[in-house]
Image (tube, rainbow, N blue to C red; front, side):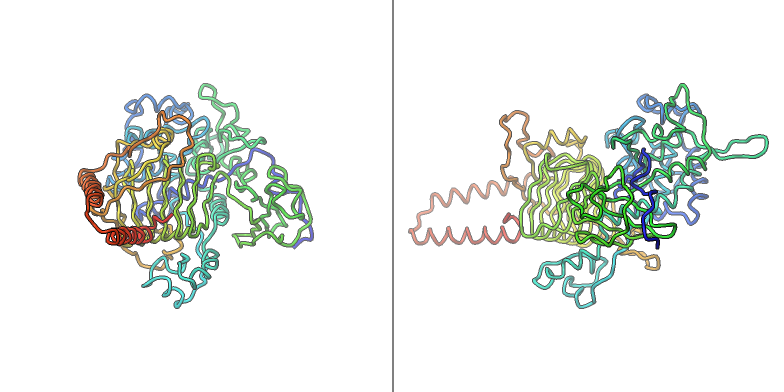
Length: 609
């Protein structure tokens, strides 16, 4: 290893910077074995032919599709699109699974800036009328080969038996709640790959597969002496599913306009196609880690270190002069005392304790408490609720993406989520959420109160799960629903979609040599067990206008009747108590008994908070 650091650092690269979009990898992976090919590039090239055969003429699509010039009406004559029926025929899958592919692609497409594909901004209930661009669909299918970071084993069979009553795919990954188990929870958290490791893994994946992705998009041109693969601005723009570009001011810019060879092109005067080799070299020069305090510093040809480059006040003296936009050379130094070290492919990751992913808000490690996050508390479009136990978490804000990970014995109430929710590795958790889409994976004994526009997806190693209609409201709910595009008149909470095997992308529980494990779905919560969840009155709004005063999702008749019956029974009980002719001592005993049962109910249903 050399004694110093060269000036060719990751942070010192010239803008624009290309960052990997985490959404495609965290919310876009589908457990459909039919999407995976042994020879990915050849398989997808053959699939392109089938998709083109299924694609109707562009004139048959809604006019709104052709309004986006960079995606739908390039000089080459118009991008082909394909809907659910065409995807089902080309992939030879059921229409329900084809619709899932289309809908999942819609949920992870970039919707910021210019050149947005119309599928990204189409209401959830109308995506079939828009269809998918074939090039973007092929990229989406290609990244189904992505694998998450595997866990680090750390627990023995005795520890696992103490946490779980029987062996499970979740064994060894979730901290539990007895006194012994709480002491071991820190070790359990260490075994789980963190957000930083996932983002480095995503970056490494894109770097490794970028040549194949570009070749998948490219077309071949013939000249007098040879043939050469080239890529147009419109084709390059499809990498926006995986990459986003930022300028020197850290502002998002359109991907094709960030590249000098495509800059200032437009449909009337398109830039000339560029050789794939030139595009590949430029992307590799400008691609770097996206999150705060995460940049790569070269230590020679063989080894790399990713060091802290966040705000100066959060860093140790060794790296205090390094900024996000301009990392200067400094002597190689030991890991700062306030950092933790993580091994990653081709290097070592040093992260400060204050490291946070870019554009994501964490609610992490809440234990036996209640926490409230409002709109002003949310930074970015994504929220991750992780490792919360014996708690109640309220996130009452409009969001695009939410992950609930590794929680137990808790209630998690979420505001309106416009793109996708993912719940995994949870036990005895109640999740209450209005959302466009939700995926539940590897959970036990949980109840999901849903207002959801698409069919809930259950995959992985699930046990004893229940679903029920949405059961609450808060004052800003309808405003938040409108802001993120969730339709309260459409609720498919009971139309669950269960895929047949444990998710193949899950490196935690599905090693390559393991046999397929059948997925268990969910049952409907009996109406007599359905209860309305009351949100504490935290409203600070001066005006009462435009506030939500009731659940905007209509209850199915059995649940509505059960709710009315319960309310009526409560009124009868109160009336009987008022009119009962009891001695003072007997009345105190009765009141004490009622309070005792109520207290038991509070503790038993986690409503104590």
